[in-house]
Length: 540
Ligand SMILES: *[C@@H]1O[C@H](CO)[C@@H](O)[C@H](O)[C@H]1NC(C)=O
Image 1 (cartoon, rainbow, N blue to C red):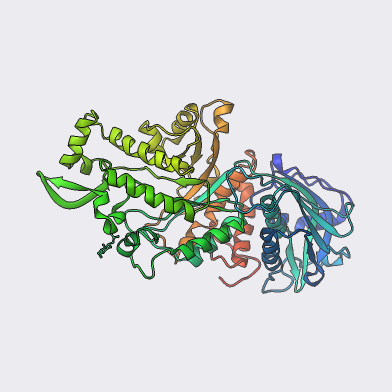
Image 2 (spheres, rainbow, N blue to C red):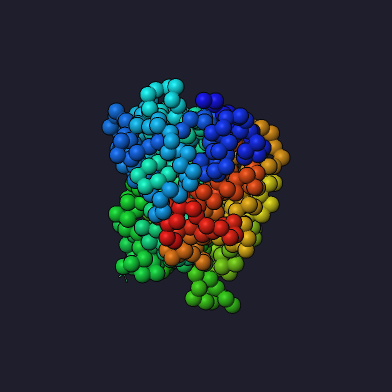
């Protein structure tokens, strides 16, 4: 049988490169080949014309080692892969595939490296997947250097298998070499504007694993509520959560999220945004915040964290010493965005402090003073950090390995400036998924290219990835999955696949297929391309 070579790295039309005079192929082409493709698109993908039948009862994952990450992934994928359509014979009306008498019996998984515990920045995620009759007898092979690569490969394998008839599945031969374009591929959820229950956070991690995203940025607290339960400072959530019984994340809840993410190769990067966005901290710890004044008198309102008091930094040191034991990732997100200076400027103690420090009336210098002290605390705790772009914009002294998170309009010049100063950058400005619009809005996310700014090759390399952001004003447990997905998948493909994968018209049928797959896997995700339906008719 002829081998059809599809170098998807550089393809210009989904079908133009299938070159064959093979009769069987012509028939296959009439069925929808896009069904058999993967999201995000692999870096190198050579598809064969051979076809294998898979019977779930006969199929085995062969894995000789003991790593729990892989063993549990096998159990998960066994279920995901062999979940059936509710209608029989959904993908193959012609029965053509059923004529194949070659059965795929195994997927052999070989991981070179050790059973690492937690995923981390710059982990190796590459893998090779071969589904070839010539290689071995009826076995597909998955090779990777790390367990993280094996997880990515298992996901790809699961997307290649499709349901033919009741109890019968199929897969095309082929060979994939794959690796991410960017090491940092994130999704941010905000659990302060609305609380999001843990089971929904876990569903979101399922969707992230399906699209190979690897950082869950957890914007856990903000002005509106403080759901994080601190052991050292229980009043923070007792007073600051919307409901201190039901709308909280206990240490057990957080461990569950981290463990679920770990098993899927996803880092949990927590954000405690200060000195602004901290009103909810003040409920349980009023003296932490700045009293605002009107006409020379306290007006009862509280502003950003009070940066002038020693107790502020004693508290922050104790608080973050706890946090770093709860969240194992090497990075913390420290926020630093949108600090409003009015309240600081109204307060006589702060005015006196400004005069003493010779800051004039430049409150950015006061913010810088606070952030520098906070960064020193975090450094003394041996953590690295990510900050929102204002920290860089206000010229606060930051460690050379700081990652600057770019979110504002005019992001191209910001990318130039941040990388010119030698810092790593992650991009979110074009991926604010909370800003919804009528129509196929994923196309605008899909056309945002993180290297589209003026700078040298060296500068471009400092852009280590990006993040889709779903702010919480209009989402909670009822709709966050539906609204975030599959739109965030557009960002996931920009961050994983080759730069040349940029044509949304070609991506559209694959995105449709991904959405239907997500529904099959129990995620209620919204339609994004106007009228249509899922062939595999799971009730939504
Ligand atoms: C917590 O708040 C209560 C008042 O509700 C107060 O009596 C207690 O001292 C506070 N605890 C701490 C550690 O501040």
